[in-house]
Image 1 (cartoon, rainbow, N blue to C red):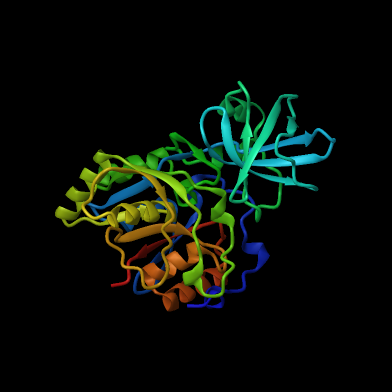
Image 2: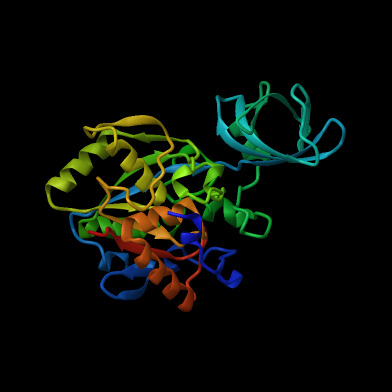
Length: 338
């Protein structure tokens, strides 16, 4: 399939720049035989007892830093992955690329050293400074590039799921942003349980697919973990006739990554799984997801799940009905194409 097969025109006015007033106020497009317009607070009406929600509990770190090179030039740093407590892989935006061995002075006066470069990413040493401590002091929320404003205090809360636990993401698993604790509690009372996986969403989630033949696209690698408790809940749900409902494409990619390993078991490591039309889903029966960018790998995943023709019908309807798109936008509930 060609990259151009996944293009569509999206009015800029539909790109959400701010979250809804309340998390569950977001609209929910339920895709069944017909399209049903709902709000996320009504999710329990469209799930079934014995269903199992799979949530990504990664925690977004305030990964964007600003500073200056020794020459005085401005620098923007985006932490991509923590190597350890004191070193990180980063992207650096500057008028001229920094030299290996040079230092960058951050906003608080502390210095970090550029000590290596590999695969387009720089390696920074933060000396004796704990990276997470420093990020929490002066870091900025790494809002995606299509949100055309500076981050604010509200984003510290709203660009984070209510169940975020494990530090490491530089982008939010955005389908999870619609949940609040009362909704999760209500769903549990209704018989819809939930379990957690971790996938630390990397900056590559914003990178467009650039090759015309999508089979040639190489996904960025991201760290994931699935514990035995989650595996046990998945096995029990399947045995009892329930559905595995993945919340977001990151949960889908995590589940299908462990499914490819053969016998289902706890796992941790890196995954670069690329899901596009023709992929055989082994675990996921339904998914909740936001509306994605044209020509993106996320759109290809959705097309694999429900069919490319159906995907375009949904997106055309969503545009006509003025659903809000991307990270702070609305959501849809999809069932796997049989």
